[in-house]
Image (cartoon, rainbow, N blue to C red; front, side):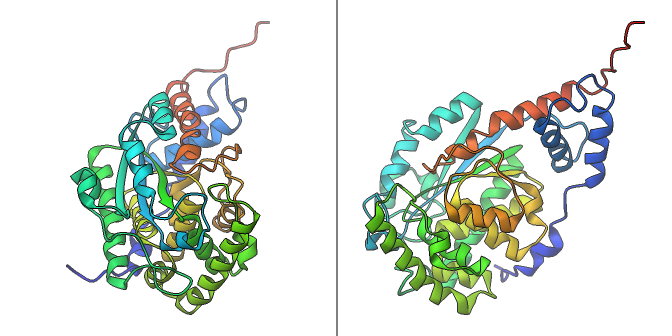
Length: 352
């Protein structure tokens, strides 16, 4: 296997074609609805540019990708969930019993779970789910690395492979989410490190923690941040030091989706942190992503501001699982359908 050179992404990733946005607007200008559909018009233009055609075509194969993992930092009691219980979340989704399953059925999307570092025996989960697993759980990032550099590269490459598989299978819209316990803590560390801010600015309530747990979480982010700063210049080493296999995989996934020209809808603070890490690798990549919603997490708001991405919705959904981002899928489907079916209808001539 050839060495992974992250600098290659900067050369491989182009911005979506701006001329297609212009073409989409020109087509819409000939319709009776021009200027009357608000945000749906902007989304239709964006979809035209990322799809490489104007008008945009309808979205037919949306897929939710959930990278799963346990984070050792959960042992510091920074999560409302017990440490090492991401497997319970995974099994709920696989049994079609989770909120993400309900929303995916409602909005015509498929769900795919990818175990990167769930702390359970791999035999407890389907082979297709565990085939990319790097390890069981991750290190306590306040005092030790989350992964070895080799594990971080393995996870990063796994995310790239998932993106290629989805592109090759005809997926036309991806929703990125996570199934993690303790995952918002490394996400906060990444955001604080990459934005050059303090732990208190990015520490949120995550899975619904109380004040004491928030203080412990803020302390864990502060301590991990000290370990993150010396490796800021190396994104892969940063992910190994204070990230985790699921975060490294999601970062590789986002970058390869941009290479393959696949649009991605980000969910909450975890996917926003991975997007920020990916932006550090290739500054044009964020043009291929949207933020589905504002979760109310301060770290997510900080990351999206740095990415210059405005959330489509503001419902404060912080469950994870891609649920918040899924709520934006019908909006995107509506924009695509309107763009595809309305152009060519001329403005009615007023009666004399």
